[in-house]
Every structure is written in C-alpha cells, then in structure tokens.
Length: 112
View 1 (tube, rainbow, N blue to C red):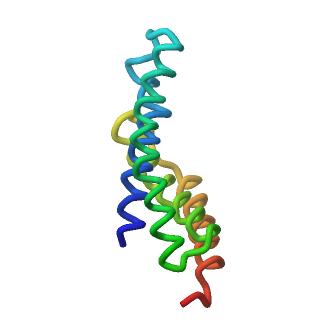
View 2 (view 1 turned 90 degrees about the vertical axis):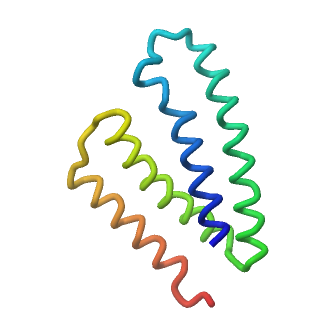
View 3 (view 1 turned 30 degrees about the vertical axis):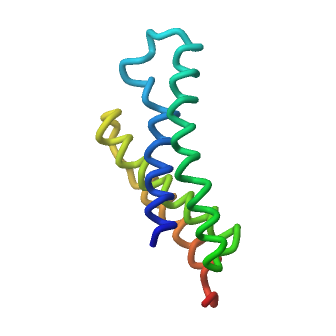
C-alpha cells in the first residue's frame, strides 16, 4: 500500500508539473514555465523513487511498477483534465483505461 500511495502522490505532482500552465499560464515565458515545472518535478521524484524502491523490495517487478504507475497516471490525469482544465471525459477515455487494466491483469496474473 505505501507503494501505491507514493505513486499516487508522485503522479499528482507530475501531472501538475506538466499541465498546470495550460490554464492561466500560457502568457508566461516558456523558460519560466519550464523552471517552475522542474521545481515541481523535483518533489515528484521525492515520491517516485521511494515508491519504486519499496515496491521492488516488496517483490513487485519493474514491469508491474511501471504499469501500476501508468494506471495511476491515467486516473490522476482524468481527474485533473475534468476538474482543472474543464475538459469532458469521453468513451475513448474509458476504453483506454480498460486497456490499461488489461495490461495490469497480464502483469500481475499468477504473481504471489
């Protein structure tokens, strides 16, 4: 569970680092946006690196860690896209999520 919580925190920060400037920050100079995003990404790494180390030490494979991160990223981005950017969800988003859940099932199937 700590791995999932850390990956969730990591993905919230990375989503903010990558996309915060799309609403209200488009007038800022690109170099300023990059530097602010790098600052946010530093803290994202402070969650991502321990998440991966803990997960790996707990028996998760690198592939399992990556696919779990991708699923969490999609969920976090979906919430961010709707709440912060005001963009609607479509059936395509559900389809993409279901495909990722299939990937999760393949990587975790049969692992104790």
